[in-house]
Image (tube, rainbow, N blue to C red; front, side, top):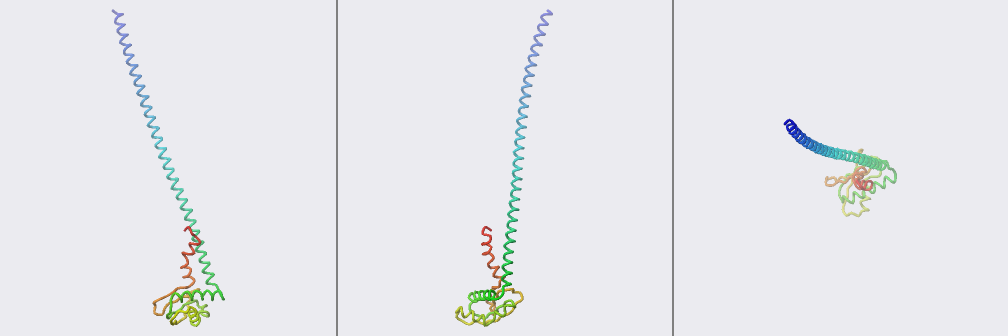
Length: 201
């Protein structure tokens, strides 16, 4: 009897041990599965974060590159603008400081252009005080005759301290005017000269 009870107890313990082993194995298997899933999720999170970091770095790098490019362009444009401004200032200075026959020829060209554009009428012509020796009513009348424009001209010449060179024409009735001073001439030529000096601007 005792032997039978011991056998039964042994069988029960063996069965319990077997069940416990199975449960333990299932638990280990589940744990391994959970660990693998956790590792996969963690790896995905790492990859996602890495991708985000890389994207952010690229974006920041792109912004930095764009900023540098813009600064380079700004400095180039600023430098070029300064060069063009300096050239204009130098050209104006040289024109205003011209003397002798070169100055007289320049005034003749400017006057002829203005007379042809304005047509007949009575005009006040302003010029630099130093140019009144050349720019006279008689001189203007002679120039108008060479253009063979039908009709009558009348001229008044007035020295103007604000003019460093060139001529300014104004009809006495206020109907027309033509600013052909060196400064105005250079302003009018600004876009043309700029296109020659900086064709890609």
